[in-house]
Length: 108
Image 1 (tube, rainbow, N blue to C red):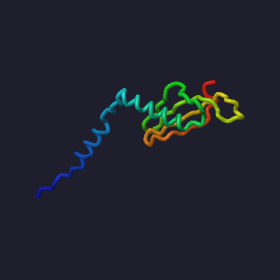
Image 2 (image 1 turned 60 degrees about the vertical axis):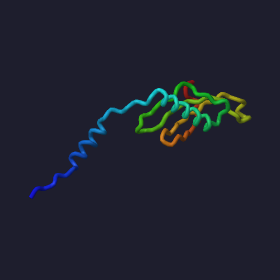
Image 3 (image 1 turned 90 degrees about the vertical axis):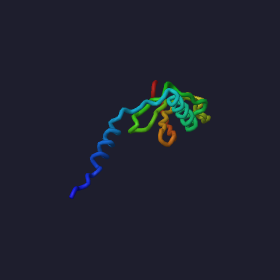
Image 4 (image 1 turned 135 degrees about the horizontal axis):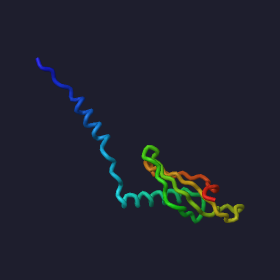
């Protein structure tokens, strides 16, 4: 009586080959679209007025899944007297959500 061979070694081999395949880089157009989405989400989350990006987005690895962007604008509160301010924005690539925090100490 012949025993049927298990397909598991073949399945495992294909799974390993798929994981070992090189990662394909995104197209320049996809990066441009990503950068626009980061800028839009971050400026909408900002508490500053006249918010602009300072430099380019900083990409964390896909394991982290975030992009950071430094923002600059003016504090809208009367007691801040239109003072220049900075915020650090973390953009979650998976959800498209932006989170900002005060970052006046950066780059000064």
